[in-house]
Length: 326
Picture: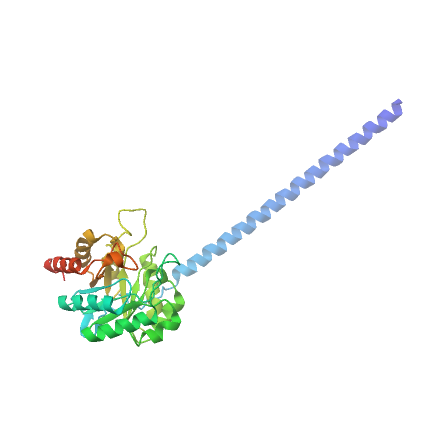
């Protein structure tokens, strides 16, 4: 390679270096502009979000129909002379599931003998496992009605399908919406469209605010006959089936005019602590207590471990009444 050729290559390399430097400078300028644009866009978006938040905060919040702001006086629901929410707490008892006419009749006779006037009984059973007893359905409601008519009792039973609401009204006195259906909004709407008291259970992981909004779905449709029931929430604690949120009782009574009951069976799952928990619920201001009773819990088709037999119920009821809270 001669000297001239070397000089030419050197000049060419110098030119390329200059070009590369110019390109790098241009690239840096473009990146700077792009970063500025991105920053400006992000800032503008943040201002829009803040503006929306400010508007939302300034807007008046809707007053719920179930709230104390909407109605100062307590709602009282009259079930053929048994008033829930009228200042005198009530006992609601009955089998987890309607299994047969004779089974329900035995429980009804025991309740009647104790002066209990409201009987619960599950005809439709939303179970955790699809292989567990799902209930007798409409046939179970018919059994409830027949037995209740014989003993002069009012009945509560869970309905799980909106299409069954109107039919169920022919057989039962109170529609129950269970914990797993607390946010089944179509079911809530259907229950709100009929003139029938509704017992709404708190969901397993529902906040009190969510609970009240679920009740609002019913009341906003025109049915103001709603009762709330605390049935325990799911926590890390394993000593009980669920965790009874006693604090929910006074909070619900403070925030809402609707009657509040406590289910001591599902919240505890332990027979030996049901009476103390019932007394605690009543002391906290509950309008009633619900407990499950079965003639022979060992043979029950659902929740066998937590249902009281009839002598156990009589002892439970006597202990709660002895407290003077019921």
